[in-house]
Image 1 (cartoon, protein in one colour):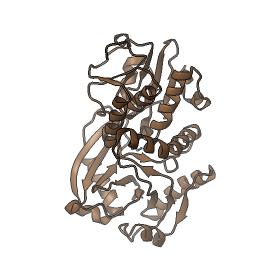
Image 2: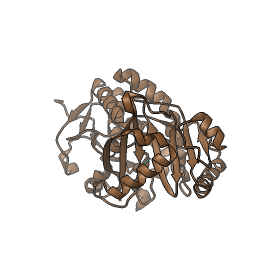
Image 3: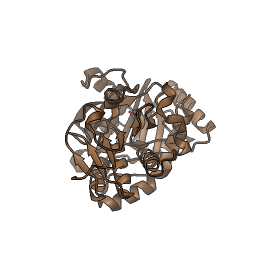
Length: 356
Ligand code: GLY
């Protein structure tokens, strides 16, 4: 890029790239700074688009934003497929929530009753109904529920597609690392640097470690189940995300730590819970064990919009467990703010000034 950009985005994860793509398609000159695009939390993420199953007690505003973003996903996926001329594993098979023991089922039911109370689409299923949908589930299951609107996408392929779409729309990717915002020359700077936002802005973003495994079905077959499965197995929460190419992502620990070491204990617990729920996984290859750092905030919700006292600097970070599902709404709200100068009311609960 020879001319000064209108917008500089710091961070080429899904959020930063989607903002760059949206801004570039609105006619803005965009530069994206990242020495290693897609190497942050999205590299490890499973890609669940789960506004219902991830609606937790005490997070109503976040649940509203998750729901708004999930509603944008079908249109976002269609536009991106066309813009990048590639698929990225967007699937709409729905999610099953399951409990192995009576205690597991009680825990799962407590949460889905809360979700039903918010009017979210999730309904209880008997063990036989669960196994009709997914015969690969263990016959030992005590029960569960289905959230038909909770979908999935492959985050690594999503990043590749967003990068192509952003570059085709005219955005420029710059490989230099940004260690301070003074190094970035643009009238609008968007900090979409995940955990890196803390050092760049002083925002209260902390790393929350997640350990994740990737398995592969034998003989290049697709996995023996199609739904995303979120389960509790002897008190251990686990999710299983099957991909058409045979991959199954198993996650994840949630640890208040900043290292990315994979520990034997976490691998043991994840595998035991997963195989207890879907016994055939014992025959799959274990192909990857990784740990990543989610950008967490004091209230677990993202930080979106202007940075107090820093004219021209916008934050799009702190997406914690929800970066992939929140990508479309984040990109749309930040782009609209840049283009029109007017904040969408959806942004109000998520601005940085709530921490001042
Ligand atoms: N959203 C799933 C996770 O953060 O593990």
